[in-house]
Figure 1 (tube, rainbow, N blue to C red):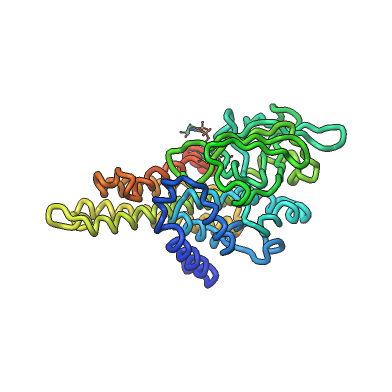
Figure 2: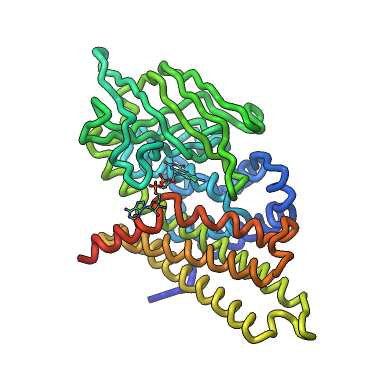
Length: 399
Ligand SMILES: Cc1cc2nc3c(=O)[nH]c(=O)nc-3n(C[C@H](O)[C@H](O)[C@H](O)COP(=O)(O)OP(=O)(O)OC[C@H]3O[C@@H](n4cnc5c(N)ncnc54)[C@H](O)[C@@H]3O)c2cc1C
């Protein structure tokens, strides 16, 4: 077993680390307070080539392996997990096209992402279908001309207010169908110049093939204020047959394939956040003195810092194992993806909570980054499947 990173992987880590240090960390609290969509950072990340990690070489000209992808997301998340969530969402939405699309579909639906910094949304969750996404009711119905009509509502959709393409999971024929499909809905591309910041506005889109998409006002969230989250309603959206990915009955299998790839990426978000919480806490406790000593030298406080480091290291190991399993397309990659996600979420929440505690009253103020990290940490335990769902997957495989 070899834990060392190869030259390419080291190059990615170094590049993103430098980018985060120069472009994100110095102003992160100001950016978060201003609450403006971080198009500038997204565009620079695109120029650097660290967006659209899952887009294949045939389209992008180079391929980024799964371990490098996880490392890139971890480093970006060290800067801000709202930004990395928004960036990673392109892969969440586009992985199914990369995995199961035809050559023509890859060309049509992935090429635009290689050509300019635009965003995609992954539309799975519905108001009545969260953890139990099979109970979704959005559906496509066939028309006489061999096209389909999509109707239904999704909620909590990342990037929705700015998305240029929607990957949508829906039932086939009727809301109660046993079959689920995956369809792609491209719309007129949106760049920073088109919608610099949506504010509290809704967005109405006339879909080029026919029908409408209504995006709700962005959600007001506890954390990850630099990512955009909104509801998406499809009204009589026309879906040509060529916009259906793979077999229109196998959508549920495709969701599982995407999440096996994407859960280690969420784990990377958690590890990045946990590392940042540990770093700012070590810095703070080395500066602040009480009882005549630096806080980091007080034995019980030192124990807490040690505990934080252990969580970070264990989470990173689980992440790398999962990334290796996904890279190798190993049959048991699913349980390692779930393990990595839960371990990283636990590390993120633990490190942010304990780190805040070690900052004392100062940690409870908006002036210190640890308070933001604490707010941001909770979602890692929730999106892409809550902790209990990951445990359910692991348990099911074990017995
Ligand atoms: C900021 C943000 C961004 C998101 N981005 C996206 C996105 O881009 N695309 C998308 O499709 N979705 C997205 N989501 C949705 C997210 O994936 C769901 O919120 C999540 O899967 C949980 O679904 P739910 O909120 O309906 O919770 P519920 O399913 O209602 O669960 C609530 C709680 O019930 C308990 N529970 C649920 N199931 C079980 C079980 N089987 N056993 C035991 N206990 C259980 C857990 O404690 C759980 O936390 C996002 C959500 C947020 C908040």
